Amino acid sequence: MIQASHRHIFRIACAALGPIARSGLSISLGIAALAVFTGGCGARTGRETREILSLKEMSREQRMVFLKGYRGDWRDSVDKNRGIPPPPIEKPWPAGAELVSLPDPFEAPAADVALVEAVRNRRSRRAYTAEGLTLAELSWLLWCTQGIEKIERNDDGNVVATYRPVPSGGARHPFETYLSVHRVEGLKAGIYRYLPVEHKLLPLRYDANMASDFKSACYNQEHVGRAAVLFIWAAVPCRTEWAYGIIAAKLIAVDAGHVCQNLYLGAEAIRVGVCGILGYDQQRLDSLLCLDGRNEFVIYLASVGRTSTGGPDSQAGGALTHETVRP
Image 1 (cartoon, one colour):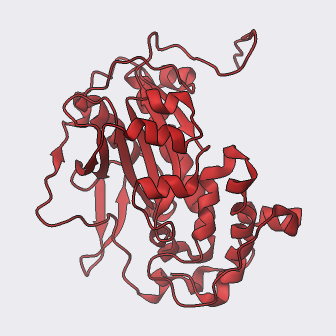
Image 2 (image 1 turned 90 degrees about the vertical axis):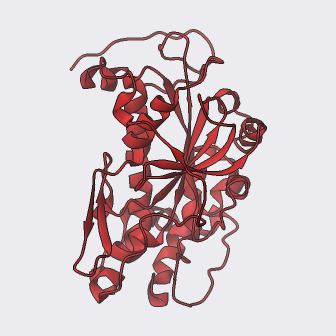
């Protein structure tokens, strides 16, 4: 969706991010996936980018371009302003596929937690019990992160925007949600894709060993293997590129944060734990989900599980002193 003449701007962002996965800086691994943005679904032909092997090849100013965005006026170059129809808001699935219906998301036993309490208690929680989640709880968390409240169509009947519990630049919502289900009541262990328009699950494959496979792909982080379910968000760049062209990469990274924060707050409301994860092997995760790594790729994931007390936990070593601060 991006003009070839504009791709040099993306190359700077891509070069800054691409090598991070090889450098061991795990905190940035998920965003490293944005290095594939020069493709995009339906991207026009143009020169392929040269792989940057080291961050040392770039100046600090070049590495900051991704965060700063584009200084010029990018609006005339986007497909939306050329009258090109937007890409689908949801990937298709095979005809006749057996879908899993989800309960009403508001049936989860959640409403006793006030918003101020959920915000105040938000923590990354990694100490999960062997108890699983209910299907109603999973339905609630899926709705909190990518559920659809309203669909807007143009005069031709094409979907131009969806309105959800999370914000997204231009209401583009450029993510597909995948689940690695380990312990959820009523579901077989395996990989599922969430269909937000239908609020249903599409089973992709059943596999009792998925927990260990994802743990290994996330550098053997224990909480990944202990989670009741993993939420895995894959970016589909062309959805945002359609409206924002060469600044789409920055918007998608910001949008991913919106989605995971809602998962945190939704989980606090039903007193389960969440931990966002950016330390992972990009190619292995894309492979586990059968993603092409170019038009769609993992950008972020989070572990979800029931905790013994609902209290925060920490991976920091040694004694900790906690001080409560009030504004």
